[in-house]
Amino acid sequence: MLLTLISFPLEEQHFRQLRKLYDRESSPYVKKVILALFLRAPLKVKQPMFKETITEPEEETNRFRKFLWSLGNSPEHCKPSLKIIEKAEDDPARLLATLHGALQSRDLNVLRQVKQIAVTRATDATSGLSRLSFNGVAKTAEAKLTNLSKAKVKGAIP
Image (tube, rainbow, N blue to C red; front, side):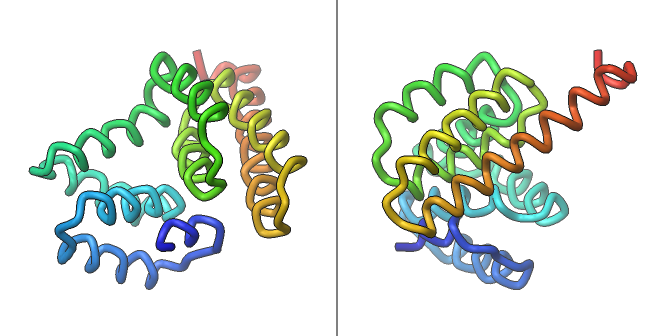
């Protein structure tokens, strides 16, 4: 149920509450859900959270944190992961969490893949909220693709 929050806009105060919950929580599952929700946080809120959780002692949670990091920072790991998750994941909230993680990438191919998955899932969505959420991911991916392409043309990105 907590993961469905990925479909809703959250404010900084919500992330402060989630951070407190993360610190009190002992369940690796709940901690992983909270980490996934932080993918939607503003950069100034997200970065400290992920830096602080680097020392997460619980192995399963730490592996998931590394997976979330790789979605945005390692195109070699992200592209195959997205292919597998796109085919295997039926839960829109879990897929949205993965797509939000991949939206952090500066790799054009990863962002194209995110956009394609989001457009397909928006078309196939049975609920209006899912459709809206996937369309939002597709629009964000398109905007990032446009910005990165412009920066590449100007020579700002190698």
